[in-house]
Image 1 (cartoon, protein in one colour):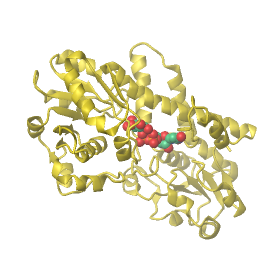
Image 2 (tube, rainbow, N blue to C red; image 1 turned 45 degrees about the horizontal axis):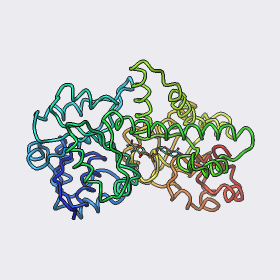
Image 3 (cartoon, helix red, strand yellow; image 1 turned 90 degrees about the horizontal axis):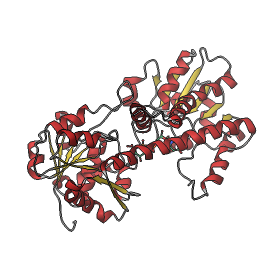
Image 4 (tube, helix red, strand yellow; image 1 turned 180 degrees about the horizontal axis):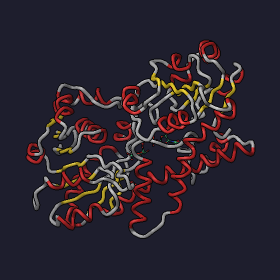
Length: 426
Ligand code: UGA
């Protein structure tokens, strides 16, 4: 149990909200978690976890007594003073973040009172200031999240850093937020609200930049006969560069990088600054998603009538999230080239069904590969490595062509088994 249990409010029980609620409960706090989606709250009360996140069902079950799910704001305000805002801020058509859900939460808060709004939702820089202009007596703390899907609980419990932004009037509340994280032993960055907001956007934009950078290096490596994996290994040992986020592949996806890079570019643009680098980061990523089509054409010529098997639909392994996934762009491009597309994913098929029209969704990798003219690995699920490539796969495929969009498969073994292997940047 924590030195001092602090009742906590969580508003918006999506992926961030539920992870936050469950982890604070695990740290010994009582948590009141509110969502306007009655069906979701009912499911949570029955003990069902509506999202795929490793370890989360167990964590929710273990802390069931400390987790109070509700559709109402009143019990949250009654029991907790720190209100963690975890509603989503999806991109609008123009690329700006849609803040309507955040606004709806703010509209439910009275002012002045003894609560603090702790902003975990990713918001444009200046959102805290704008809310404070309208409600000057509202206590506001910026506390951006850096969780990765698939390892969110690990990331919450062992963060690289915790960022807390506040103004002088809210410093007592910010101290209490900081106290919640103290048992985790991570550096706590205390700063102003605008800087905290910028740390979140700049961090995601920088990581996306690293990925687009290594993807361009990969594209050059293909031309000059170098191996991008070797290049990344050599670069990453320089402590100033670091080894992470230098995996070349089929581009970044997900609900965060594409949205946040766009949002930061847009934010800069709205304030009159043209963020040139981010424009290139986005363009490179779009092209990278499509480059796999060219690799197929190199070996198959025209794709009209060709059967192409996509291995993986999720934007990365260990999640069923398909938002901005490379698979979606790829399926569309392949179809417009006249190919027949089939796809398999261990957990994302249900979500895929709603989005991937004209794609035959298969219940196993082997079913997808059966009769295929080529396989494209889009998501590096471990089970794709363990397939019997030399045996069963080779037997069922019409042609032994593999495009490995994540440099994930055993290239030497595949080539030895007679496959044509195309990776990225090698
Ligand atoms: C990302 C950040 O990593 C988190 O710190 C942040 O909290 C989160 O966004 C957010 O803003 O909420 P996430 O989107 O879950 O987390 O996924 P990542 O593991 O960062 O991967 C993002 C994409 O980059 C994936 O499509 C992945 O395949 C791709 N990637 C990653 C590469 O292509 N190469 C790499 O070397 C690393």
